[in-house]
Length: 136
Image (cartoon, rainbow, N blue to C red):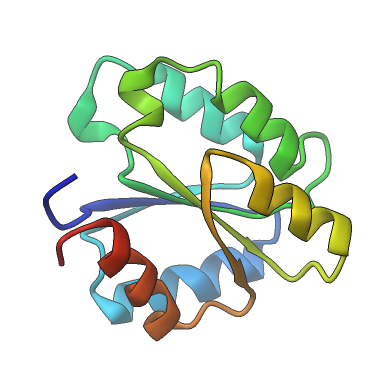
């Protein structure tokens, strides 16, 4: 991808984390639009509803690991079944407070996850990841 990412999708069941991270992203001006999802299911519904509308898809996804019903790893299992047009456009970083070594290794092993970021989100760290994968 050779341009500035426009849309980010935040997937987190914690409303406070969503608000804080949304505010941090807004202040950082790294994205033009933020798509907020309270669950993996909600995020998959959004992605499936917009499969044929490239401009509605997020360029970047920040995914929490520990969520009820569908955790981040379960989301990734469904995500990898989406068309390449989606999975090649939407880069994923895990944003998590997990200290579980197994979770960290599993996240790093996923071919769909480019980075594991620790909560709270730091704009500088996010910007460095974006610079590596996009031209900012």
